[in-house]
Length: 196
Image (cartoon, rainbow, N blue to C red):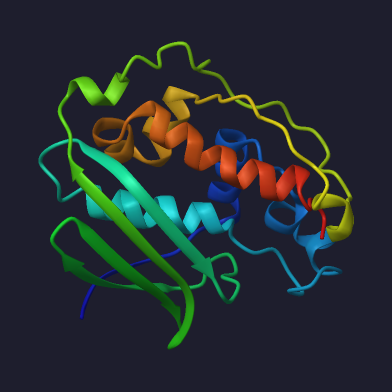
C-alpha cells in the first residue's frame, strides 16, 4: 500500500458541493447547527470525500473511465480542514482507497472500473439538466419511517460547477455516473433519514 496524496475540504467547498449535489443538510454546511448534532461540528459529505478521491485518481488517467461498481464505507467523520491521507491499492480493474485522519480510518472506497471512450462522457445523457439544485430544508424522518419509503429522484448536474470542483471527473467520467453518485448523497442527506 502506498500513500499517494493528502487533501482537505474547506467549509466553502462543502457549500459548493451542496449546490452541486442538492444535499444541503446542515450537518455539512452550518457549523453552528452542526455543533448540536452527533459529531459536535460540521463534517464533510461522505460523497464529497469519495468524489475528491476519484478526482485525484482521474487526474493521472489518460482515458475516460466507466464505473462498473462503487462501494463506500464511512466509519468516522471528517471535519472541515482535517488533513485526509489517501492510501491506494490497485488490482486489475479494481482500486481500493483507505482514507485516514491522524492515523484513524475514516472511509474505505472500492471501485471496479474499465477504460471507456470519449463518447461515454456524454453517453446520451444530455437530457440531465445542467443547473444548481435549489436550497431546501432536509426532511426530519425517523429511521423506522424510512423503511416504508420508496420512489425515484431527479438527476441534475451543473457542468460549470462540476468543472470548477472536479475538473478531472468532468473530463473523464460520464455525466450519468456523476449525477447518480451525487443523487446518492442527496437522498441520504435530504430525504432518508435527512436530519438524523
